[in-house]
Length: 383
Image 1 (cartoon, rainbow, N blue to C red):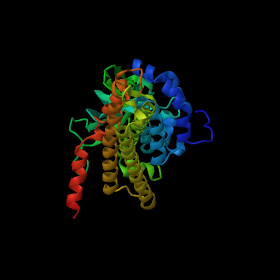
Image 2: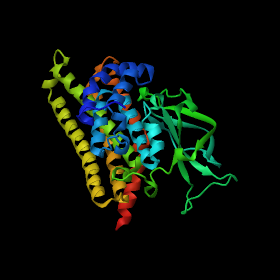
Image 3: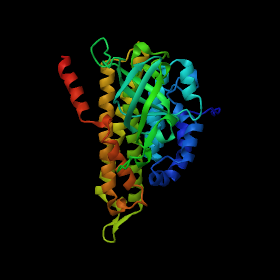
Image 4: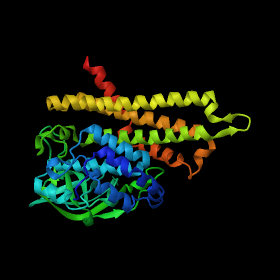
């Protein structure tokens, strides 16, 4: 891997954002990150934000990771989504032995992607065998390795159980070249993420290329970051993507309002009291959402750093803040889109794609309304 210059993740993200913005139309058209964008992300070490320092990664605090993807999202949501996805996937290195992690993440390009939990792997001598197909592998088209989260079945065909009776789950990792990728991601938004399906047939996975993801007792790396686990870090990262999309969309509406005349009789939008009030309220909504997300993340991080424990209260706080932030960001985008009027429907203007991207984000698991129910149930039973 190339040596990185001395400035940080957020500054590097800002530096390459103009390149990403120029490539955004091509990313949308081809439904893939362009080679130039992938190279810029890789050469600047952005995929390695959450990789352990022992492997040459930044092992960054959540705030830096969130700011990094937020900056990229202002330029292009699909790029930010892939970066957030693959960045969090790299956290699995903390559960692998050093040599295995070195092979995966320090052989260029060192990018890992994975999809949803599904299917089974059968125990065999020295590892596991699996035949399966998984969906929702954002970032898979630039990845050198793929992963999957599977239930474990013994050689006798009996599902393995944990001590509490729950199914035993492992994350298995294998070179992307060993899988068949299926081009299925024809979506209304986040079109450039290449969130495709992938399939393996009778693939042998050596034991060392498996891990108990997000199980604290099996961690091999020190430090508070990996106590958070991938689930909550995904939530923080994708909420930050939504903030970046909302910021860019509202900024575009503000720029439009400064220049656009609604009609000869009505005069400039910037002089319209209703428009002024709407921009003020929407700006307040976006700033409040961002402040809440970062405050929740930073409070969790301070407590975790002091105590070394990631509690159920931390998990609920992150879940609530991330879910609410995504929903609030969607409202900001909707307001900006409608404020732009007919201008917003043209692909040549900076509204239409961001509107679709934001509503694709809001449909993901991190934005489910059931998260409110989970948090509400906890609040009501605490007393």
